[in-house]
Structure formats: structure tokens, C-alpha cells
Length: 232
Ligand code: ADP
Ligand code: ADP
Image (cartoon, rainbow, N blue to C red):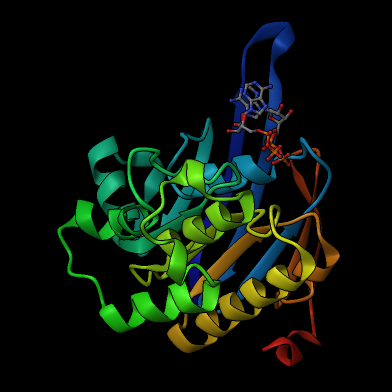
């Protein structure tokens, strides 16, 4: 079954001469328990697709179906609740809160939702991501790679059914990328999670079960990756 689905999704920015057609009627379903990579040139609409599908941005027209709900008809409050419990987002720019420690940033989704952390899962996450000894530091005391790992831990701490990741390995070297991708892939398989990841890196895409190529607001290619099973 589809974990989330876009139907005729259109997103335009601006008006008149400055109008940009970021999504030109996209139809796509992401199946539950699968890891999908989205590739394509800068400006082709990849981030816009993830932002509109996760309810962070409003679509111009079309529908997004998630857990039996149409996100496009929802108000901000409803969207926030749905995202809080069902969707994790790893931002390209990390979006960490500067006043708070790494530990507090990671736990923030649970703090906001009033949920108790799963201690073992927290330890496993920060251990695998290699940030156990950075937890009391604030974001400005961390390297870009460390901030990225904190952002990944924050997106996964609540074990969301669906994770959107915008270039999650963009600030990591190749060894750290391989570790993070292997972890993400295992997490998908063990928790039955659905992960949608934008990446420019073919090595990162090789961890995914499926690769989609975007071009000018449309899906230009959509292929299964038969060798992904070896990447766990
Ligand atoms: P990608 O993620 O593939 O690089 P984006 O989804 O960021 O592509 O952008 C798609 C198009 O929409 C680009 O032309 C970009 O400049 C434009 N765009 C994205 N966000 C905005 C925005 N907030 N306002 C105006 N134009 C935007
Ligand atoms: P990407 O690598 O995904 O294309 P960008 O650097 O283009 O990322 O965009 C980063 C942020 O800036 C996004 O939140 C996007 O919506 C916004 N953005 C992108 N293009 C424009 C634009 N032309 N005008 C305003 N905001 C934009």
C-alpha cells in the first residue's frame, strides 16, 4: 500500500512574468516500507515536492493523501499534529534551534508532542550517528556534519512512519555518509518506515529501493534498484 500519494500535484510560485512552475501535475505514490531516492538538477522541483507532500507548504492544486487524509484540505493546526506524529523531516539547512543543546534539539519533537523518549532508541540513534559525546553542545559549537547528524536523529527519534530527507548526507564525508545511509536503510526495514530522500550523490541513491529523476517539475524517470538489498 501507498504510505503517501500525490495526485495531480501543482505548485506555482509568483505571478505573471515571474511565475515559476515548480511542480507541473505530479502523480506519485511512495509505498510503505520502501526507501526512495529523488534525483535531478537543481531547481527541478525536488524540495518543493517534499515540502508540499509533508504539508510544510501549500500546493497550488492537486491532492496529497496520507493515512487516509487529504493534506491539501487541512488547516495549519491539523497539519502540525499530523506531522508531529507521522512525518519526520530532515532539512537541507538542518533547522536546529540555536538556543538548545544537541540533546534538546533531538528530543524536541517528543517535547512538543508531550511524549516520553524511548531511552534505548535514543542511545542507539546517537551512538550509530557518532554524536554521543556532542549532546550537551549547542549547534554553533558543532561542525556541519555533526549538525546534520543531530538533524537526522531529531527526524527519527519519534519513529515516524514517513521520513522526508533533503540531502541528508550533503554535509558528510563518504565514510560518514555510508554509515548514515546504512543506518537509514536498516531503520526502514526494521521499523517498516517509508523514506523519501533527495540526493545528488549516486552513492547515496544506491542505498534506495527506487530512484526517481525529476526534470522541470515533472518525473522524467522512475526505476527500481535491484541491488539495494545488498546495502544493509
Ligand atoms: P530543487 O529542490 O530540485 O532544487 P526546488 O523545489 O527548490 O528545486 O525549486 C523548484 C523551482 O521553484 C525553482 O525554479 C526555484 O527557484 C523555485 N522556488 C522554490 N522555492 C521558491 C520560493 N519559495 N519562491 C519562489 N520560487 C521558488
Ligand atoms: P535546493 O538545493 O533544494 O534547490 P535551494 O537552495 O534552491 O535548495 O532553496 C532553499 C530554500 O529557498 C527552499 O526553502 C526554497 O523553497 C527557497 N527558494 C528556492 N528558490 C527560491 C526563489 N527563487 N525564491 C525564493 N525562495 C526560494
